[in-house]
Length: 273
Image (spheres, rainbow, N blue to C red):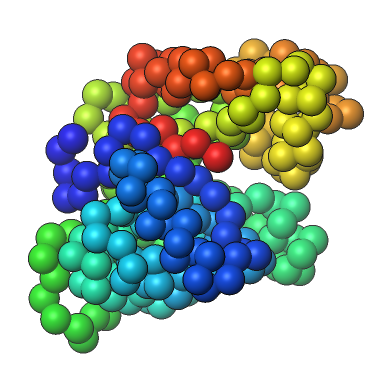
């Protein structure tokens, strides 16, 4: 894979907010020992992603730690740029910054802030990061960035300004559409939920529990509509065909095949959750 950092073909996306420090370090080391190229961590309501990434990077040797993704409405671009550059320097280039615009429901309801137009916000944020002051040492290479891009405009911005895109909560068909918009060069790193369960009822129950949050978020709903689903299929936990499209379930071979579907559709790297 070309680029400033090698994240491999497959990674892991997970929440470690409830882990102790020792458990988090052990988990990251196990992920590295199993041969995964990257460990993706979210920016939500638990551990700070930059502080947590510093811990994980300090206790691993090859593993890339990526944010999936940092919410641009909760941090000034100057602070994000300095944190990114510090982690890039500390880790020898093993930190990958994923940025996203979050959702109107999150920003307006939870943080009581206006939700600005996504595209101008992200473009201005990237401009501000480029112009951020940095009084640290000269860095070895450019710290890498990807965007949480689902729609065509954000995908084009990702191709124009960053290494590529990190789509979340989307089927392999979305990967194919995203690759067509991005073109052949940029990275495309979709997240894929997996459930190692062969019983359909148990598997879909587990899947629906994990889908409850995303199905209520407008950006994800709009993207599922782009991918051929209809509005009523997204309600009441999601119709079976929505569940089966977004969450891979079954035996190991079936899960491996879903990851391969994303690669055949144009993914550079697939992170399993």
